[in-house]
Length: 183
Length: 183
Image (tube, rainbow over all chains, first blue to last red; front, side, top):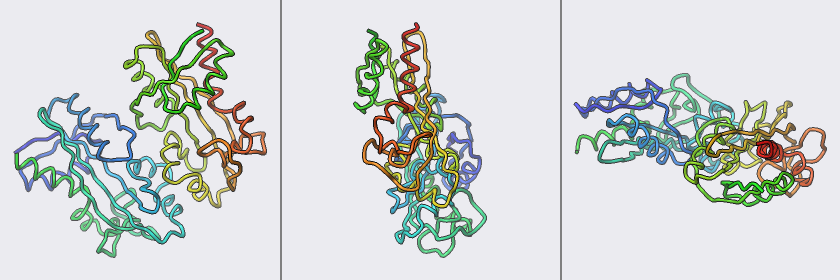
């Protein structure tokens, strides 16, 4: 069993990661450590810089994860600032900004930054979809009620099981686990 | 004459600072240096951390400046992320988010972080005003066409002279100059 520290304040992310990790012989333990999140529009860069910082502090194999919602007709807004924007204007703000827009394509992107003594790598998972006209569903969090993944008629907040199967975070964690298993 | 390095990629800021500085015997020289902008909703914190970083790199008295537009009915959005948000959704996005909102109160806040071998200080300037219903004026930049300072009937983009006299950045730079002169 490979043991990896998951630097996050969100225990749900760790639970989710362990569901995937157990299939690969990887176990994640939560560590609360504040790391500086650089101002970049790229979750990849945020994860990479965060991972470097966290490894320097902890000196053990670690991951950090950053994710964002990129809406095409809003030039990628809110992107890497999704969490911060959500706190201010919620998904209601997003719906208002998209009022009258026909192009509702959006992507959720998750980037996992991994760092150990030898290497730093970033693994990205993407899920395509679109922004609904109205919020639907109660599960999940943040923008889940207004995001419908491609090929589904339900939002992430209406079908949590489906979310867990296809989510951006599942994909990025799986890529990480494949990588760790292959080393 | 006190010489201070102004870490910024924006030469207009330096020109503006020198107009004020010359009244206090302070001269600012521009230095282009990327500094990590932390993810904080407070321009004060961003300026403080940026100043620390820049001094460590340059080992000379330096300032960095960060500013933001805080809109009351949007919970302070876009705040310390004003520049980034502007690049994505412009002031048009702000007007759309505020469609139908009666409370249009807003503040521009500027924070100047100063650091030398002995000390780190932050100076804040604030200008109160409100968000107009429509953009007006051509001068200035970013949110200037939709910001009308209290006591004026013109936006920052309609009356650039008035903007320079009352702006948040003028106030923060003045506070810095008073401080430097008193040391």
